[in-house]
Length: 56
Image (cartoon, rainbow, N blue to C red):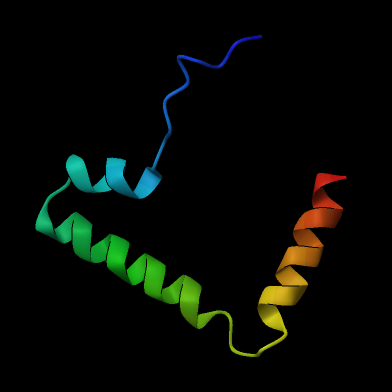
């Protein structure tokens, strides 16, 4: 299998290229809410462990 024609995909870039200012503000709020959900120093560590478990 060859991946020479594989193009990277950035979901944030796609959302912003087709959106209005209201959609950009909604995306900004969505990102801020995700970042606010990590309140403790251990949250990103636990998230990484949970993702590893989910992938197995």
